[in-house]
Length: 449
Image (cartoon, rainbow, N blue to C red; front, side, top):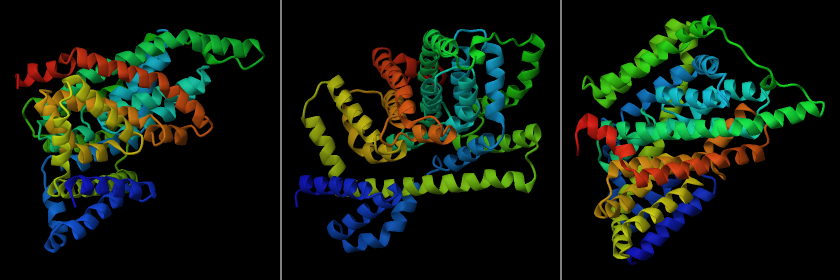
């Protein structure tokens, strides 16, 4: 069979197995092993475990379960609620201050946990009830938390960026730094939308009250004394110390990314033990159990995705597809647009982990040949994959929010996230227009590459 026929068969088989409902890891692994049996030497089947092990034997990948443990320690405590309460106390007088508080809380929590679902769950469980109590519409309350949660894969430490660094063979430290500027850009865009939307939300709450509904807290002026605000600060400071400590260790040259992940995990366990008294075996067990479950699931997906990519490369599918894309002689920006459109479509059905490991061998060579900075592209691709986290039909964050607030109709959640999808498109456009937003900080700290 020709490479084209094998490639089409490989892609078709993958889609067929995935749409059957089989878990992603097993779907990718079964397709890879089946094609090894029919299209590769018989001896290759004897090396499946060796290939998976060799692909995963990366010191960079070691940081993933350690960062997951750090996020689990933060997520299983009251850190999200305390963080949200303190930020709300300081921002309550700003128009749309409650929405801004949710965005900032999501950003800080994401930077500590490195997980999008954990951020949605932790901040959403506190933020959504508070927003609804104050008269915010259910769709907006759900949408701003779902969108804020996506920052978990952009702001460092990001598990998705770790995988991209491995797949693209790029510096993880430089990639982490490159995510900070765009992350702050998205925080600014989301917060700005909350301010603009505040007038409409106030009008909705007032209309409900005038029609005989409940007078929400939004229509009443809240007041926090300076003493109360200062009293709330100690709830946030330990976690800010954790965030700064991890960043200083990584970018100060004191530790490698994997060592930093271990340091962050131990610091997080220490902080929840001291601040929240979670030190007994029965308290620590849920943290370790959650870490083990999520790490096992994620590493299994990574292992099978790497085996899938290995078979794709051995059968020259990825090389042939890359040559075909280059041979189309598309202009630089048309090429980028086509690739990002493909990532958006894949994001409707697949999680970011699988998208990176499946597409990297195909899309990175043409992009590099076209002159794109792969660090910059990693950030842009991450934002595009963030869209998939809040876009149906899969939209992982949508279902996390539905679990946190089951009484909000799924339709309202979906419509609530749509404006934030538009803001993400704006962020991608600005990054294309001003690439220094992503590359400026890493070039300043680590030198021009």
